[in-house]
Length: 413
Image 1: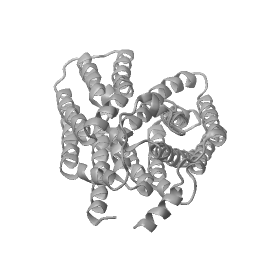
Image 2: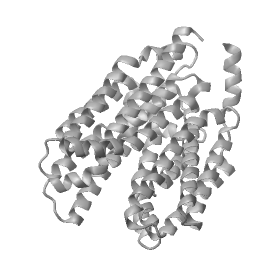
Image 3: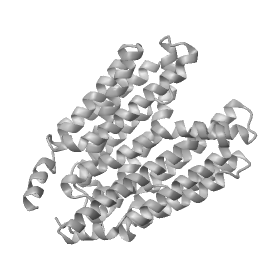
Image 4: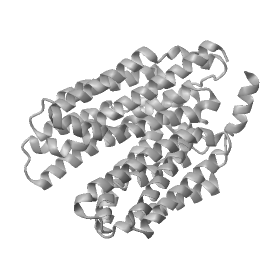
């Protein structure tokens, strides 16, 4: 491998990872406090605040899920760097505008426009996948997803302090500054020429690939289902876990602290799962890693269902984070290994749509089911995880063994 190419792809990965961490951190500086902001805009009824907040939070991922494949296709045609820059620039403008709104419907309108221009998350994964050598793809995807996981873990803490110091309106301007920094990182550090050199060195792209062709790639639809299932389980805990913590006997004043600890454990364990997945894939086939992640996830769901002790819930949160993180990165890697270079944007856009559908539908279903029984939510998650594992075990075959790819690449170097 040429030294310039080696340095080029590594710099690209660092640029995409840094931009994702900055962007996801900036986003979560303010979004957890959106109900408080809606109340500041004059909405007094609690039900109305919940309604405006729910619709405003839901419209963006819904539109992003719808448009992610299209933005990915444009990225395949015109380059992913400019698409990410376009998305981040729009967030700079729109979050700045959020600081000046005066009505709740203004917030909804801006969130709608954000949904149209969002999508840098999936494009970033595609950029990491296409920049890295084939045997480094799992590590590259895992690093970007680790950044996407850690950003929301630290963002609300910083945002809570920031809102108390400068107020919620000015916090939106700070978020815009975060996106401006992320935009600058991509602008100055990401080098499209490193990707071009990679294609010239043997990873030749293909002609135009239709969405129907993308769906026929080996294991692709199975990985879509797995990614949906993992995201469904991951996002189901937000509406019900604090209620469950209080239900099992934790005193009311300690519920926010205990719930925050559980969510933090899950987020940090998820980041660790993303990070170690690359190393696991050097030792085990992709199918085995996904099944292992599913087993950890099922174990976490079982512990939550069986016991309400705080230390057991902490262990369950750790198992859930590790399992979902490792299985998610392995699933993206399995799909990425069969997507032609020229179709990375479209392919990862479709995968992101599956993820966003799971993200949007899970809290709604968990909220409805949790009204009957919170443990029923955990049992549903267990059933989803088991069904996912059975499908992988029965139907998935390894299209690419990354252990052999690593050996072959070492021999070529």
